[in-house]
Length: 234
Image 1 (cartoon, rainbow, N blue to C red):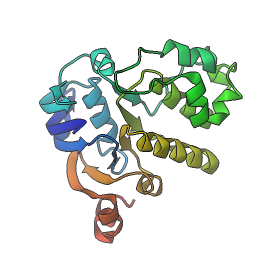
Image 2 (cartoon, rainbow, N blue to C red):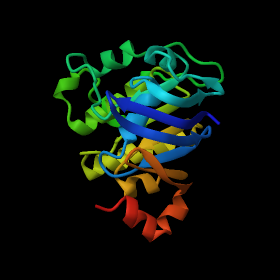
Image 3 (cartoon, helix red, strand yellow):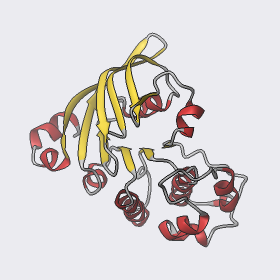
């Protein structure tokens, strides 16, 4: 497995947010992390990356334990993270945002370059000199993903990549993630938009109150109306 998480607990102060979370992601696989708002999805991604310290459990990336490592060390191992807030550099142009994120190529992986990214996100090529703060939300989301790819990750953690985007931009984001999957990149996709996730994910993990309530193929989840009603519908 590219990523293995076992018995993961995490807290904010005295409040326990995650309890015994377990999941895994294989190379070239998209796993959707689903659940209602506040279920613990974003905290799971932040704990995997080291932004929230785990209080218990094992996190292995490419077979090596990473629980407790600093986020920058985890990122250098090849785990890319696109936060829900995007956090692009608003005063820098698209070109500059990409250049500051450039990292050395990794063995066995085709390196990401601006030219390659513009094939994945054609909109960005037309905005290459525009400051990030003068872009639409959808354009900023594309830039956030593209900037993370400039680090040549082996796997992506995507937090709500479709949230608040216009339908056309959602389609473009979906096509980009599908292309990354075809290239063999592993993706852990945190989403509330089930229709977006179902078209991309091979498997699904559902969280409720910080605990895993369902693990299975996406096809099995879509065939099980009772599970969807219990854990996903508002």
